Structures are given as structure tokens and as C-alpha cells.
Image 1: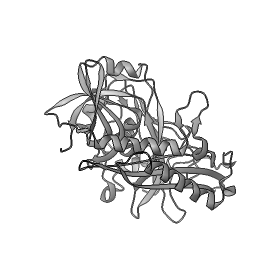
Image 2 (image 1 turned 30 degrees about the vertical axis):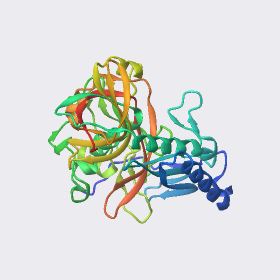
Image 3 (image 1 turned 60 degrees about the vertical axis):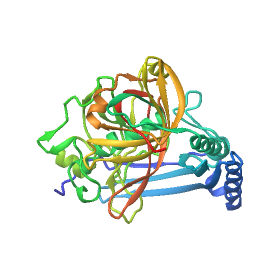
Image 4 (image 1 turned 120 degrees about the vertical axis):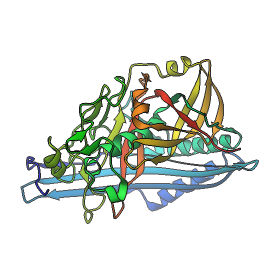
Length: 398
């Protein structure tokens, strides 16, 4: 179907936001920072045997002009730091990688990020501190016991960094309407939220009443933009409202097929590539509980900190996601560090069993979301607060 839902022909200019213009930063300064951070990471622990540090700062400009009369000029600043570290001790090897960044200037890596100031939902220290903390975690993990694999479901608490990958994999991708309509089945799967145009989960309870999720390009970070690549004004899309599934991110074409108004989520990574429906900032909404209480109320369970690697079913109906760090919880207290752990669950069952949601909402940059053929790798934002649910804990080997 080649119909397109109608939208206004917008004309606008959106400037980039920064304190230190990326174009003013000498290449020598960027190289010097990566060497300095790499040396600091190496010095963190004798267990650190390898590290790779990357830094970039850039300005990009997008001009959208349509035969319908749209003329939209958007400019974006972006600065990013990445760290990959390998630690090895007593025959145990641990590899960790993470990224920090924002749509701002060079100040992001030198000073860190706090957006909005005072009550930040996007917050990072300076790049050196960020990287050395990751290195210290990798070194500590080499001395940790492997996490066990449980026979059945146990109580699990996920920190905002881990919750971010849950939002990405079990909320973001299955609510992209081109995926749900099977326009990309051969490349990246389908969505359990839509079996056909007359058999969908819209209006059904698929999560606990404590769960609300949405995608919002107005939030700061990697998923922020004013207009998508059809010139459609970007707006918040609620996917789950207090447990009830509401709808999908769409394009003008998929809105015409499925119904509803276009919501500004059709983007491409390069002008020569066909746009796809992509996440903006896809998140779990903030709850009303003190995140510390989510742990203190548990007699026995596990606390997962930081996401690592996802493994997701074709239709996203179940998942397995590993964590950077796992801690056993006993009688409300966080115990020793465990390594090589994660959780495995049915997506709907995990969402239905959420029984507490924290107030500590955070956004995490995801620099490597891949989709399509040819592959388009895009930077998106994901996040949420501390969550408590039930899942099978998956462990490592000794």
C-alpha cells in the first residue's frame, strides 16, 4: 500500500545545541584525550590487560525538502566516548564495553553531562572517570564467583542501566510498526503485539498496572529530534498505559495502513538509504517507589546492574539479557558481586509480574541499534527506573 497519511508541510530551522563547537576542537585534542583516558584505564588495575578508547565530536545537518512544500533544516551536535576493556586474573577473563554521550559539544567528555541541570535524567561524569569506573568493574568481576542458574523464576531487581536494554528489546523493537506489519520479517523478525490487522494486542492488558512505557523524541539525549525524515513533527507515543497496550511508532505509510496519525518515527541513517521506523527515546516511565525499598523488601532475590548482551526471540515474545554485574539479595541486603549472570523470561509474563517501579528514572545512550538491509546503525536513547519482577536467573561457569 503506497498511500501516505496527510501531514502539514512544515517549514522550520532547528539549530544545534553546544557550549564548545565540535568544529573548533583540534584533532590533536581528541587524540590526546583518548591516549590520556586509555592510560588511566590501564593504570586502574593490574588485571586490566587491554583497552580500546574512542572519542568523537561532530556537527551534522539535515535538510528535508518535499514536493508537498516542506522545508526543514535541522542541525545536530553530537559528542561520544566509548570504552572497551578486558581484565584477566586467575584464569578468569571479563570484557566490558559502554558508551557515554549527548547531543552537545566537546564539553560532554571534558566535564560530563547533567541534563536537565539540577535533576538530571541524563547524567554522566567526565569521560576519564566514566572509563576508569568501567575498568574497575571489569577487574572486580575477575575475582567474583559466577552467578548461578536457577531452576525457576526468582525475584529480580534491575537498575536503570539494565532496564534501558529491556526497554530497547522488549518495548522498542516490537512497537516499530514496520516490523509489526512484517515489512522487515526477513531481516529482523516480527512482533507478538500484532499478528494481523484484525488480531493485535491494542487495548489488551500485557503488563502490570504499574507499567507505563513510551517513546519520546522531546527527551534529551541520542533519541532527541524535532522532525523525522518525512518532515513529521516528532511526538510522544505511549505504548503501554498502566498495563494496557496502546500503540506503535509509525510512518506516514504505516499510519495509512494501520490507522492513526503519523507520530514522527521514520528515519534513515544516511540520505541514500530508505528510512525505517526507529526508536527515539523509548523508556519505562518513572514509578513512585524509593529504589532502595525495592531491594529491602526482598527476602531472597538478585539485583542486576548494567546491561551487557541481548538474545531475543524473532517476535520479541521472550528474551535473555546478560548483566554487567549481579548481586544476590538476602533479607533485604545486597550481597557479594557475581559475574556472568543475566535473566531469561517470557516478555509478557515479565511485564505482568512487575510489582514495584522506582523513582530513579534515567536515560542511557545506545550507540549501536541495528536494523534493515543494508544495515542501518542508529544512535537511540533508552531508559527507565529500577524495576522489580520475576525471571529465571541465568549464570556462568566457574
